[in-house]
Length: 183
Image 1 (cartoon, rainbow, N blue to C red):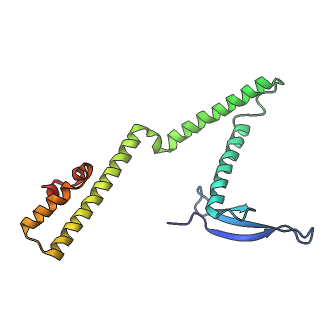
Image 2: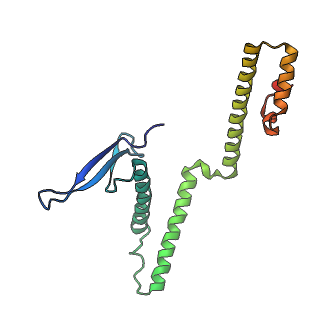
Image 3: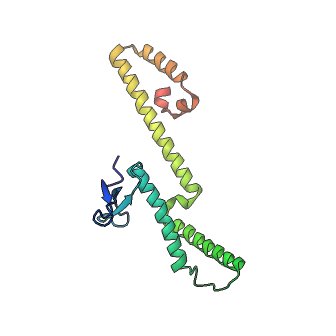
């Protein structure tokens, strides 16, 4: 598959002229999902973490940053309520977080086809069945053709072999095969 990152470079961070101390770090460059021509540089000082783990951790951290930025800027966390009561402040924070959750669910419903509920799962199940059935059909047909080519059985021997082979398959595989092979 394709790599999730464009470049990974080990570097030293710090000013050796100032205090002489430098720290090992890794810069990982990834493609910006919102602008495919752009890239983003991530830096990590834990050299034991591989690039994919760095990307995963930054993804989680970025989601948290977006959450707090949205809560503070758009949902007025910190500016909408000016009371001194700890309980009231906690309740206000809970309501702001609740509004964020509502917005997130609405955004996902608008953008993600996977939220179409049962219809999505039915489509995925059907696609998986079609893929399995078709794959099984190809394998069985290839095996039968190989048997015919190598062993050159008579029609009667081939029918007996086919029936014996198919009868040994699990029921769900027998049902997945086309009637022309089973008959």
